[in-house]
Amino acid sequence: MTNDLTMIRIERNFWRLAPLMFLLILSFKASAQHANVRLENPISVSYIKTNLARTSPKLILTPQIERELKQKLKTDQLVQNYYRYLTREADTILTKPLLKRELEGFRLLFVSREMLKRMTTLCMVYRIDKNPEILNRIDAELKAVCDFIDWNPQHFLDIAEMSLAVALAVDWIGNALPPETVRVAKTALIEKGINPSFNEQGKRMFWINSSNNWNAVCHGGMIAASLVIADENPAIAAKTISRALDKLPNSLKEYAPDGIYPEGPTYWGYGTGYSVIAANTLTTALGKDFGISDSPGFLESGIFNLHVTAPSGYFFNFADSGDKKDGDDSVLRTWFAAKTGDKVYFDQEFYENPQDAGRFAGLALIWLSQYKEKKATALPANWYGNGSNPVAVFRGQGDNPNQFFLAAKGGRASLSHGNMDAGTFVFDLDGVRWVLDPGNQRYYLLNKIGFNLAGHCQDCPRWTLLTKNNQGHSTITVNNADFDVAGQASIVDFKDGQQPEVTIDMTDLYFGNIHSVKRRFVKESDRSILVEDNIITNDSTQSITWGLMTQAAIRLTKDGAVLNQDGKELRLTILDPKGLSLSVISLDPPPLEIDKTIENLKRIEIRMPAYILDERQGLIRVRLAMD
Image 1 (cartoon, rainbow, N blue to C red):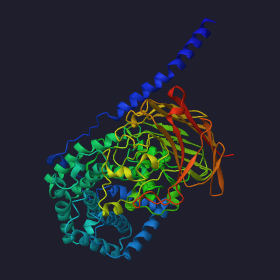
Image 2: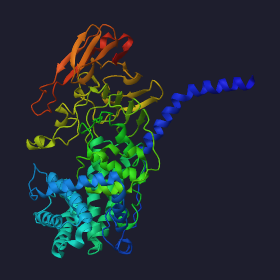
Image 3: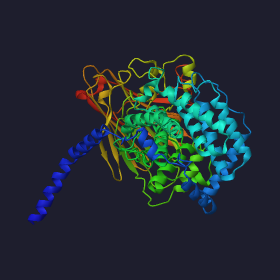
């Protein structure tokens, strides 16, 4: 009996302390985000001369890896199938004109990316088939881009991607190319790639010390270029690689603690892709990646990408993200699969029917040939991750593309590519995205008119755009004001189980115009979610606006609305406060001529004056459910 009473006391104390324990865990995870990330950095001229691989290729592909790849080509149907895709892509490239130095606005980026796609594809196919027509085309492509007056140093991403393209071609095919082409290409890598990277007073050179995708892309491209010219100029190679190992931790620390990439799923592919390039090229050329792949949260970021991809294939497209996954993501996750042996990363469906593999197309064949399944981690139905842009996801089980999917986020607007989207969510059910994020819009048209898209200051023009402002997202607005760009919304509670829930504290977003806002999402069933906003006003609070973004047709009802889309219906019910009604604002066409146009876009609003709340406290409770 005494033991039973002791156990009862322990259980009661556990549940009394559970919320505190959760907050302590959150605090620990948040502090881990700011943990110092340092890479091993022994790089010197002597180190390069001693450790650089003596044979070529040495960038991602090595003679041993190539032998194993060719053996897989004889026996592995997926490898065979993907190689047939590469040969078709190579045939298509042969029909296209050579690349020209043609800027889009101030960018050469699309030319650089096309060059990278051409080189990874053509060079891989040539190494296997030894087709002289393909070799001649590689030679012509290299001479064409190396003859450019420059690789556009005003936008260093362009240089980084072009450098990787040229470096891979020289490393993989150099022995078969005319010596003069190799000389010209190596000279270009130094004079048009590496040397401009040390012009720290030039335009947009922030990447050297930044923490966003530019840091990974630019240092990753410079590492590849340096490894290729290191045999002829070890001094500049050592200087460049050493700098990269010193500076890459600035972007690598952003993955901690849980792998969430704060710039969203699209930029996860970009920044992480080049961190992978850095890790992979260093490993094959120098024998190790100096700790890149062991950085806190880095490998977990591949799981993050899976979590924010709905069963339909659409992203939770927060920050400046595109709407839907493509072959680039499947290609990049193949490296994670090869690195870990975990089937969870491996997209078999993509390799059964490959398309749109992107600029790393040729690299995918290498990573695919290296993949050996060792385990199969199950993707949890309910998940949250912390960091500067925390995210929570609830999903149904299995592979049914019509299953339940809810993703919500906190964060702050001042992050790179950040939007005023804290508290927002997307909701998919029965194959329909009922609640959407407006996503990204093309930069070029905005840059063309001189629009300052990059600025994240409180009064910057960025926040006038529908896609960037809090009133263009499914969140809570106070006094019709913009969010505080420095305000941080954090996940303060998460419960797993049959009815998982997550709470986001949004109070910091409102410049003190409200005492408290805590937003709670509950998955009530596989057909229903509850969105509950716990609000405490103060003397500055005038109005609260609850918003939801959708493309559905809307029929207002006494207690809410019925949404109709793709022949299906979803009921929106206002549970509290009683007596409030909805309003619907059409956003097609959008408010500004320069805004992104989204067909049939609408914002559903519940507008609540602060004075109706008893004792300044109340709940807005809305259920979204399908019969």
